[in-house]
Image (cartoon, rainbow, N blue to C red; front, side):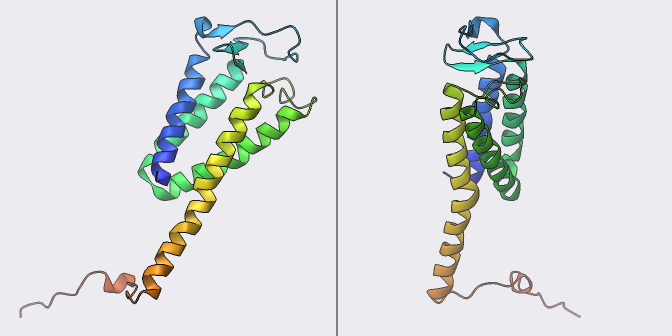
Length: 163
């Protein structure tokens, strides 16, 4: 899968998760043992698995729209992947720390969200960082095999004008 398709597919998945959290029928009640949130509007367990509230729904929807909008550009897709990797890794670590597992009461990142954010962070890191390294290796292999690299001025042959 290419970097552009990663941004599109992860964006669609995040949008679905974000938008689904706005529908009360998709939410189960939060357990009594769940950490207390400062913003309780729209809080519950999405599909009975992921703790959410309105802030996490808006966050995931925003990140999803950003990812899907980056589909047209490799540079934008790489920036999205790198930013998503860092952000999701931070949220996964926050989920383990009792004081921060609700991001100071704003949105829940504990429980199943830790695994989701960790998997997304690892995948985004691979596409944002490792896929660039593999692309450089492919370019180096072409150069070593004897194929002459093109310079921007050599990409279009000059046409002679008839006088």
